[in-house]
Image 1 (spheres, helix red, strand yellow):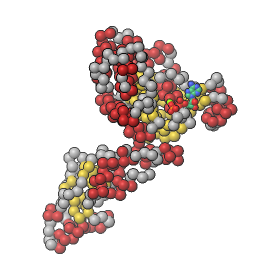
Image 2 (spheres, rainbow, N blue to C red):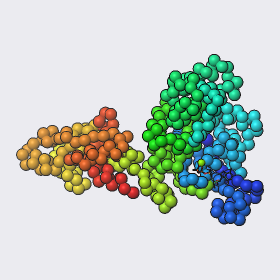
Image 3 (cartoon, helix red, strand yellow):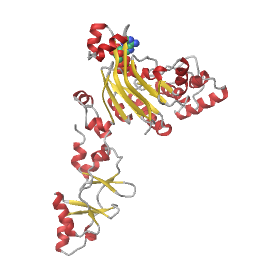
Image 4 (cartoon, helix red, strand yellow):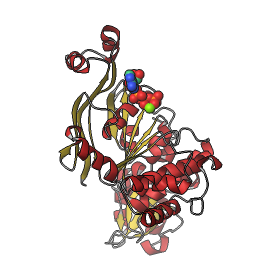
Length: 391
Ligand SMILES: Nc1ncnc2c1ncn2[C@@H]1O[C@H](COP(=O)(O)OP(=O)(O)OP(=O)(O)O)[C@@H](O)[C@H]1O
Ligand SMILES: [Mg+2]
């Protein structure tokens, strides 16, 4: 995976003598001590991470943890006190005025929490604005703006004024304006925080849809854990200007780096984040359909299980047999094919645990995880579905 933007040891200190204060910070002074002793505010403290091309990277943290300060460094709305921000191998912190202007016009765009639309311009003009600044001809920019409005589900609304639109729609305009420039990187600072919960949920899904189509590199800020885990390919958790942990939602859920993170994820609804692939076992005990019933008994005994899945040599699932049936069959000289059962449940790896719960509670046997060719990749037992829900 190609790295799109790389942040190295980034620090931002607010106040009159940031460079002087930086030294104290580097010697180990805390954010709190810095404020107390020098009156300077540490916004971001020695943060490093990389964002990959096409990734949705979410930065999450409580109010004041430094999220906005960090994201505003990425387009140099904040000038970092220290550190590098590498884009296509170049440190944007060192850009001159012209390079910076070109970077902002062509490579990066931002969506703000309070939309930031121009009230005196129509929706279409708002979306076309960045293209106009770039010097694009009217006909072309209006065409792009119209197409982008389509993309965000606002086709036909171009002639309206922003105030005639609901909050959710205004933020779609904000998104369209950012997308119209076709930026490499999209910065979104709590874009949905000002919206009603239902609208917010729609917008989250919409963003995921748009992202599936456009595959932008997105850096998305939120203080809502559920939003972070729903949207993020990876999530960085910030506290006091520093990053406490970076990982996929599953990594953070299953291996929280410290107590702070543990507290943070307590309220998470795990069943909506964990998928079948996260709670399944690799099938250690399997019966191949060429094996006989004696082998079946041996396998079940060796693994302490009362039923076993039967597969062919390509590991395509054929059915399941139970120990009781096998014992009877041996006594009555029956064959494996005669006792093989098909009344098991299957699922695929991507299914959310939430959807497996009813299945797991009803199912007589473990759930088989299969691909589209019915090839068995894992087994889910009831306890792993239900125990996966608590930390
Ligand atoms: N322009 C500024 N001047 C002085 N201090 C600032 C400035 N901007 C931010 N700070 C300080 O930097 C720290 C981080 O603030 P920031 O706005 O980045 O937090 P945040 O995580 O975005 O919070 P929120 O969730 O409330 O938006 C805070 O201590 C804040 O007071
Ligand atoms: Mg903020």
